[in-house]
Amino acid sequence: MQTIDAGTRAVLAMRFPDWHIWRSRDGRGREADWNATRRRKLRGAPPGIAARVTAPDADGLRGLLEQQRAAEAARQAAA
Image 1 (cartoon, rainbow, N blue to C red):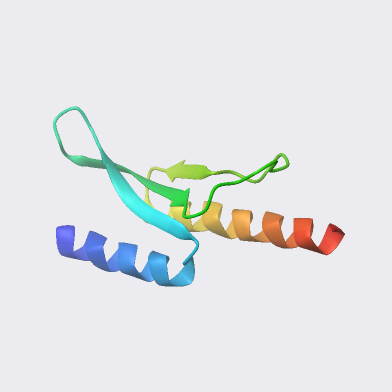
Image 2: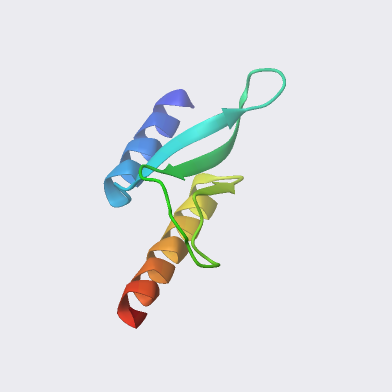
């Protein structure tokens, strides 16, 4: 399981280089949710642009990161 998770984290990290991908742990020390935090600080980010996203699984996290990428692209296009 850990090898699969490490591979999945590596793939997500390559697809989303502006984010730090990691797994949180539950009260017993077992890996829990999938998380991503931005590698750079946000200043005055509009609604919809998050500094951190969390999902229960890797596919959910991938979807959230793709949503963030789309929101950032829309923000840049509007500027």
